[in-house]
Amino acid sequence: MPLSKGAKIALGCGIAFVVVMGGIAVVGGGVAWWGVGKAREVAEKLEGDQKRTEAALKRANANHFSEPADGVIAEDRLVRFLAVRKQLYGTYEKHKGLIDAQAQKKEPDLSALAQLPGIILDLRTAKAEALADHAMSEDEFRWFYGAVYRNLVAASLGKDGGNVSEVLGAGAREMAEQAARAAEAAEANPSVPEEAREQLREAARNARESAKQAAEATRSLDVPPANMALFKKYEAEILRYTMGGLELLSL
Image 1 (cartoon, rainbow, N blue to C red):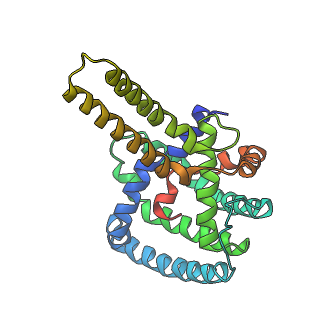
Image 2 (cartoon, one colour; image 1 turned 135 degrees about the vertical axis):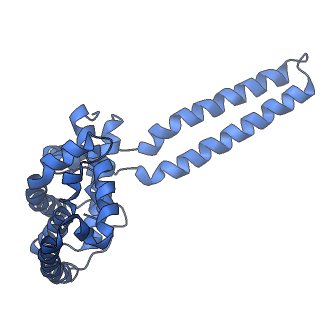
Image 3 (spheres, helix red, strand yellow; image 1 turned 30 degrees about the vertical axis):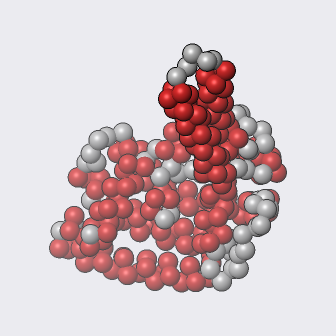
């Protein structure tokens, strides 16, 4: 079940702009982009939103979460996770036009940069309140984000089960097998110099080690089949509320 072009765009759209958002927002909350009068207004909003955010996160994080040992997603919690995403999307949608437009440019417009602090404040407060409203801690939200969007990776590889490491490791294993066959052929051919044989043996050993490392590195991407079934059931909502790139700002 490969990802559509639209799904891939949804996952990646806005990343470059969001990175810029994060970098600029750190510098004095971006207050300098406004005049002196606006600076006071922004500072007051910042203080008010910060208090709202802290209070909401305190309520949200009072909800205990333990990562499931088998990595299997509980459907009722997935529904809750998507409810949080949907609520956050309501705020994101107000700024989506600006974010998408800037994502297509090499450098954001100054007029767009001037709006960044307000956008970031809105999104962070909206997320905190959505988590509190749906009784989900930040830890659970982060875990679900990783678990759910790993499913997208598996889907993009056309897997029904979710054994992503098997798919990604297939190429490395094929190279190792080819190197092994070449070494075996050289061993069986008396005309091949010993130095060349040793080089082929070394290449085969290196290829086997690379294949092993590739399998270990990608194993964390494996998705339980039960999760893939849930992904298919809620695919439309998951894709709709991707809001590509916002997680780079811890949103």
